[in-house]
Length: 368
Image (cartoon, rainbow, N blue to C red; front, side):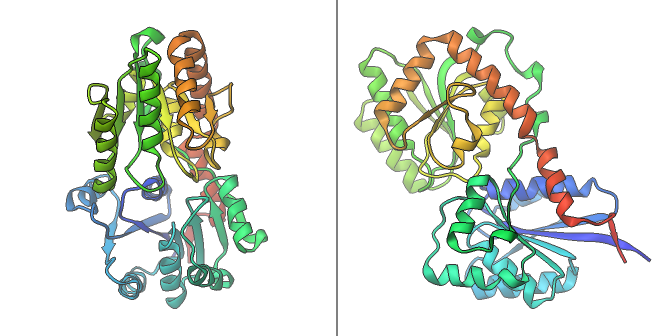
């Protein structure tokens, strides 16, 4: 008797973009006849019982393994694989893809995939050797953008095994009725939705806000997202140092992000590096006028002057100039927002991402 195809996704429990992609893939797969999924999270500080239960409430099977020692992570994951017997394992993100693939190889999983979520990761020579040693057992290394795929090849991953599948978002969260009918009904404010992490560049955005004030422009800046408490405190200290307390609001995690995006004119992704920035794509889907740092990943999402503006990395002056242009030229900002939404709806949907992953499985939907 045929049994369902069993697909396991292993990813950080940090609820980063990689976590969201794995969740979205599990949700899409569970709608397929003849397919079962299991999401395994490597425990992080914010892998709370409430967050795990929220995933289970969506109908997902979820397990959590230790993050204390890599050897313990692999041992616990091997136990899960042995009990659940997946046909396919997707191991997401650095360094989780190493431990996930190690466990899958040790338990003889027939098909194993490595998913890389950033163009720039902290590969030491040892970690790179460990990752490359798993290539013979890996069907493909998937970059979440063409830039990430290129970075994999440059690190020594076999080109014939490297492919790009761009991340997608749940477009149904951004329906037409959510959007104000007129641009001027949005608040002439700036929003950045991003966790506080070494990768993100909140400092340059805060410095750009100070430059705008010197030019007589005082828009509100909303910073949504949690992440590192230390880095948030550092950003708060910079706000105080520059005297911007009346203009900056730290929102933490927000449950109504689509609504906040749709009510705001300008979105900024100030960042040091990216793979495929989901927050930027969500802002595009909400029709925001978007400004992003000109880094790999963001360059693939934004067409400068057509669907948004790109500014040099870590350049507060250039960022302030771009923001001034959008805030003082509503017609331009509105045009860029409409074009960004059209782009997001056309090529950045979660369903399209799932179709590309589904094609990798290359099965009718069941295993004997």
